[in-house]
Length: 205
Image (cartoon, rainbow, N blue to C red; front, side, top):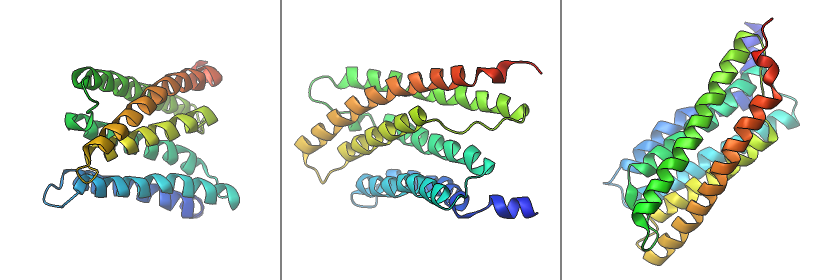
């Protein structure tokens, strides 16, 4: 009981709240009866993403880092980012960059598949580590790729609904796709680095 009280500190509560807010983000994204619903969903996404910075800042500043937080924080990030990318793929009109629409959709699908595959592989790796009583925190490269993933999602969402300004939507889409490409490269690199750095997880006792 004492352990759970210590583990459920403010940063961890914020992390859990971030996970609980994700269904609301999905609802706003599809709520067509609400004017500018995708833009509102984008603002809500920014709010949720900000909590990722907030819980980490509080945990480090007040020395509230726990194993539960190390476990939950990357999961919350993965669920949020994966959900956002899936939502974007369900509305191909968001990926509208001038004359290369079909190629853009194909590229986006492949890039997101790589990103989600990496997240599943690393999650499985963490499960193996947990079975060996090893808690693996997110590394710096993983945090950087998460930042680029959030930026790419943000601009791609903005390209789907920016008050009907077509030119602005195309600019946002272009920026989103460029950052998506960067995020994909960083995601693959961080996954390889994470597993190689912690390769002792695969060693039998």
